[in-house]
Structure formats: structure tokens, C-alpha cells
Length: 161
Image 1 (cartoon, one colour):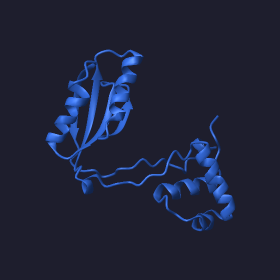
Image 2: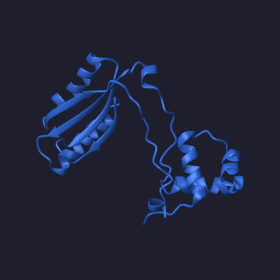
Image 3: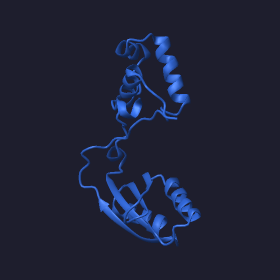
Image 4: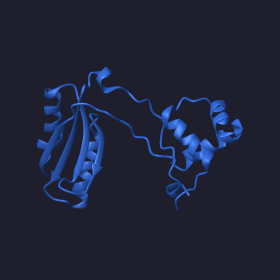
């Protein structure tokens, strides 16, 4: 069953997506709730999995990972165990930021980061050439990122009840 959220929940979620370090008293001011109520709601949102985690968003270029790649991967066979096996391999790779099982021309789409082309080539050897079930992969190099987020819209009443 899809949980329902009121305006205060939506405000909490939207605010925390922008800055997870916001203090409870500021959240209380923004929502019109008491600090204790905000704390209870946040605990419930975490327990229910709506808030799946709290992370620091890093700038890949600041850590030398200046290149981003979008990779479409086509598997040789699509048995459930082989799909799961490739997903496990891709998800275990630190340079893979996102791994999506998709419909369309490919079976997976990966978002990967690398230091340079040599670093990406080493990644392709591990992820694709060393995997017997990978038929082919197609890579697009990101020239400029105009938006990079995992934010989820919180202002859609048809979704949130």
C-alpha cells in the first residue's frame, strides 16, 4: 500500500533532499510542527523506507573522477540468474554509480565514472570483456552534466495521496 503524505511530510522530504543537515528546529519552523513531532515523523519516514539513506554528495571531478560514461549493455542470454549475476557484478564495482535493468535495445544502462580513458578501459575489461554473458556494450561519454541528482519530486499529490 502506498503511504500518504500531508503537506508537512512533503516539506520535510523536499527540504531534506536539498540539505540533509538541516536542524530539527528549522524543519519545525518550515512545517509549522513542533520539534518533537518533526523528529517522530522523520523516524517513521526512515523506518518505512521513504527516507532510504542520508549521504554526502561528492563532486567526482574533485576526486579525480572527471569523466562520466553512460553505457548500454546487451546480454547474450536473459535468464534470471544471468541477469542477477550481471547486476551483482556491476553493483559491486565502485566506479558504477547507477545500474538499471531496462527495456529497449539494451538490457542494462550503467552510469560510470573514471579518472581518464585508460581507467575506463580497465573498467570495461572487468565489467564487459571478462563477462561471458555480455554480448556488446555501447558507450556515450558525457561532455557536460547540466543536472545530476537523485531527487524525487515531493509536490505531486496524485502520487502522495
